[in-house]
Amino acid sequence: MADVFVSYKAEDRQRIAPLVQALEMDGLSVWWDAHIGGGDEWRQTILRNLEAAKCVIVVWSKRSVGPNGKFVRDEAARALKRNTYLPVRIDKVDPPLGFGEMQALDLTGWKGDTSDSRYLALVSALRRRGLKPKPSQGGTADREGFDRRTLIAGTSIALAAAAGGTWLFIRPATAKSDSIAVLPFANLSGDSSQSYFSDGIAEELRTALSRIPGLQVVARTSSEAVRDIDAKTAAEKLRVSNILTGSVRRSPQVIRISAQLIDGRSGVERWAEVYDRPPVDALDIQTDIANHVVDALSIRLAAAERAQLEAGGTTNAAAHDLLLQAEASLGKNVDPETLQRLIGMVDAALALDPKYADAVAVKARLLTEKAGTFSRSALEYQQNYAAAEQLARRAIELAPRSRSGYVALAEILDQQLHRRAAFAQFQKMASLPGNDAKTLPDYAIFLAEIGRSAQALQTAEQIVKLDPLNPRSYGTKATVLAHARRFRDALMTVEKAIQLGPQAKPPHALHAYCQAILGNLEQARREFAAFWPDIADAPQGYVAPLAAADHELGNRLIEHLRKTAGDGAFYQYAEVFAQMNKKDEAVDALARAWSIKDPGLTLTLVDPLLDPLRSDSRFRELLEKLDFPT
Image 1: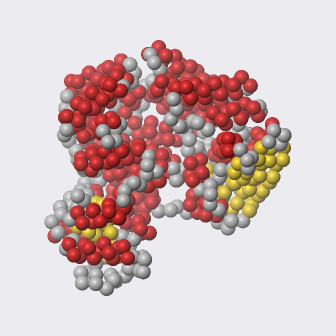
Image 2: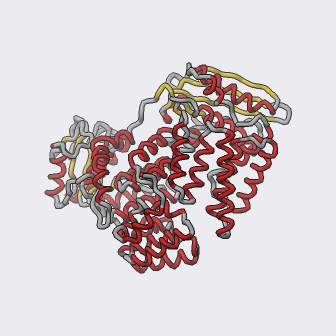
Image 3: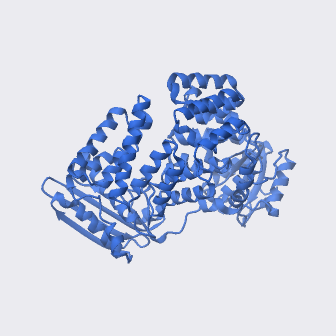
């Protein structure tokens, strides 16, 4: 049961979020309709929480007092009947007839400052109703075992968010003139199996344009989310000033590619071209489109920078086509047979062009996946990583100005716990001009894991700007916040991921984990159970906090890990044992994890689940071995 239910008009959500965050930072549990999951029966969920709340804050605004505010008035009427009604106003309006007997607290113009007298008046009103808000001491509640230095270091950041930083997250930004989205090119070939080619052309144009210094290019997922709406509306949703769209029709004899650059503000065409060429000219067409976009946007490039616009990294059209087919499956869950088939396709591309740097980098990523997920022995694990590392270094040698080789090598080194070497490769990647949402998530998580929270958050916010409609963007940012011990901020951020992808399990797992860390154990348990009927099937690293108060569950988690992962999950054993306060077993599990170089150890520095071990000399010795960059 939440302390406070917030009733408001949905269109005012951006203005309400700072109030919700401030109340939560002051120790109150708050329910608002952002908590509704995609599968919930929303009316019943709202009614259940409305009638269970100790206090209902009804927010009166121009929208909620208007003719479309009937749901707010209905919720206010129910709150009045239960004597839980507490009105506030965020616009200079009077409550509707029947709700004006109690004076509304005035929050007009308030943007999150918890020291503001208007907010303090609201806190006093809540206290008079029996609630006990506790003014925050930096935005994160103390929890036994937390590292005090982390809490102190995070104070200024958390307070900045409470004072208005959240508005930057939720308020639509103004479109920048140096921003563009490449929408998916329509497949007009009459064959749905050719979609990989039209989608691949759009993605390679994004990659080429992202190498231009100062040009913000929206990433693939967000661009594909608006593929069925007009260019002007798409520009508004993505907050960009330019839209590149087009179509592809391919036959054995000819390829026709049309492209159109549109001003996102006016909807006026800035440039357009139709290409009718032999299929082998597809790469030249892509390069020509990128150059025309640069010219139309009046971007001045040096010769070396313009050379970076050459698409594909090969002149062999057949090799290019094979790589596009393989890349269409990247990022998806694949079984060992599918993974081997993709490796075979990339090998075929490299047989046609051994110097195809993009293909070399993709094969390095595929072998990294094979090493970390499907290796059947320690020897196979080592061989796959060694081969992947060799390929990543070859990709860098072939294309030193491309980010893909550096991020592939950094990930390979990191998974083998060579963290300083991984950091060096990430830094080289970050030093290259342009921006690319594909390479930044790994970098953001890495920075968070080595304790560079501010830099990690800055990178995560850049990802959100580049890919604003992708749930994973907000999942990455929420993970960064969680690693920084900003669990309430992480909750609010991962809720955005849930809104964009309500059926995806990982955001719900992270949301439940943060609830558990904050002590909301029953809420966490219910959320896990909604997606994993047997809670032991939930990701152990997320569900482990529940083992602190439920040792029976902890024993079930250990047994489940032994059955499903055997010796491949020593780090997860350590997390569960630490939460059960079985320190010797936890330290022993970490020692075993170190002996096999378990990639889970990358979390050791920031993992709150291991906090019970941090005073143990054996744990500190392990940290020194882990090669964290200073």
